[in-house]
Length: 173
Image (cartoon, rainbow, N blue to C red):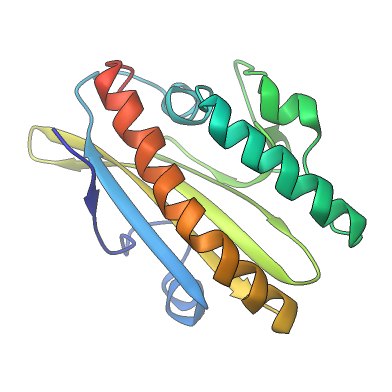
């Protein structure tokens, strides 16, 4: 079992136009061995177990971003994201507001001056096999967004793949 890079699924609630027009997008897929998990359980199996190095990078990034007037998650939301039993659009899941929630997908993200991003966690079924696809798309508004992504994308790619691989290894998915 391993993490595989893939296209953003066309069945995602992100929508084809948003996916096509994104300045940046990536998507990674892993098999889902634990049947019957809810989307909230899948989300926290990934984002509720962030390694210390990643938390440090996120807290540092957020401290810098806040100096530029950007909306950022609190340190508490990074260090220990609280899981609830139910969520609705507009609620925060972990550090991000929810834009869509369904039986097989959660789309969360944030809109800022420099860029908007969306994170999709999608369960796909192919015959008897299930998998989880984590997709990120960013729509850039200005040069600051492009510069930000230039520096963040390498950390982002490594981080998402690490979260997925760790969840697999720990048998949380």
